[in-house]
Image (tube, rainbow, N blue to C red; front, side, top):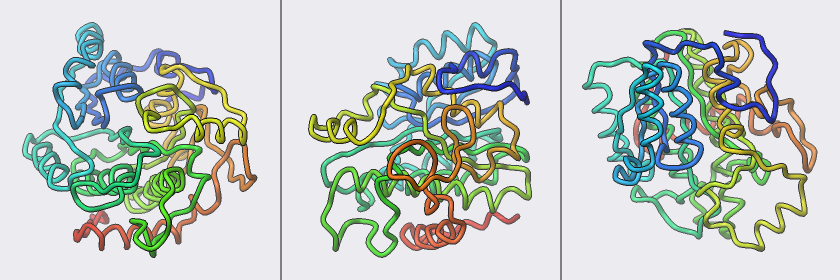
Length: 315
């Protein structure tokens, strides 16, 4: 680990400079585009074996040619894993394959997600953003926690969009409240942070620390459902600075590899540092409701009920 100081403009290569990840095995979701590709590339280039999960393997195969080249040049490895986070049968099949392979993991980076999509349901019946961004990763990590090496890391990509709304545990699927794409996105991103808090609480006894990160604002496929009206509203209410992919993925690899576990465990990170709790209407930081341990436990209980599966991570 290093104590070097990084910030909003730091890149993945700067954050990982001088770090040797040979022998490390890291699972990254969402490697068919954007931040997932850059995250996988930067890790494989330092010698890590990256398991890249994606829903569309054909698209991912074409999109990750640079990852395979970086792995070959840096002594790392790369393989693809079929995973549809919106379909819990796919999530369970993927975790079964990972466990059956007999390899242990050093980190899981939950990068995949959807944003501001029209109201719809996943294959498993959940509101699409909550079901994909939160529920899919919750089951994935819950089922793979036993194969994460002691001292490992879990990183869940959240967003400053968590400031749009807290989770609604009484109506997670908008069955009784009007649907709004950004409210749904906010709920799912708050759930990502609370999920990291809950995983960290359960796994820190093994030295495994979980954290949530805001990558920044990057032009990727994630925003494909955003209307001009939505973008204008967000731009008017906040001061946004766009990042490159290399800058956007930096906080993921910083919190997953570079930062000390004590610094980031159970926390929310942005711009390669731990964010302060800040309930202001706009600006940086994390809302208090998103890092509330009691809310994290309530979300955990609700999520287990919704997926009809319990995860005992105390062993």
